[in-house]
Image 1 (cartoon, rainbow, N blue to C red):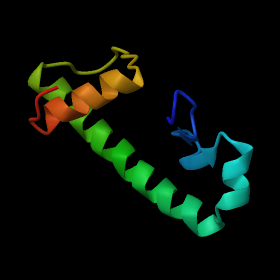
Image 2 (image 1 turned 30 degrees about the horizontal axis):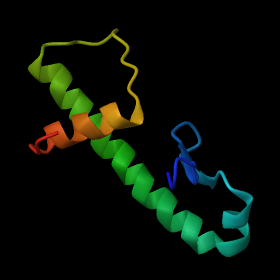
Image 3 (image 1 turned 90 degrees about the vertical axis):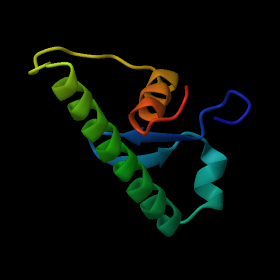
Image 4 (image 1 turned 180 degrees about the vertical axis):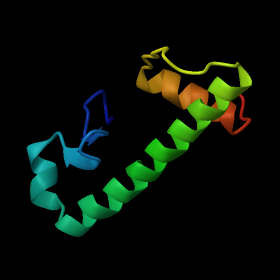
Length: 85
C-alpha cells in the first residue's frame, strides 16, 4: 500500500502476484512479477508453517478457520519469529 492505495495483490489460490494499478503494468516487466511472485510465495509458505506450528503448540488438530487482516498476519508473523508486535 502506498498512501492507502493497494499496488499489488497476491492470490494464494493461483499463487501469482498481480498489479492493482494500470500504471504498474506499464512500468514493470514479466521478470518483476515473477520475482515478486516468488517472494510472496515464500512469505505464504512461511506464514502457513507458522500457523501450523501455533496449531501444534495450542493443540489445535484442525477444523477451525481463522480470518486474518493484513495487520493481523504481520503481527502473527512477528510473533512467530519472536519480534515484539
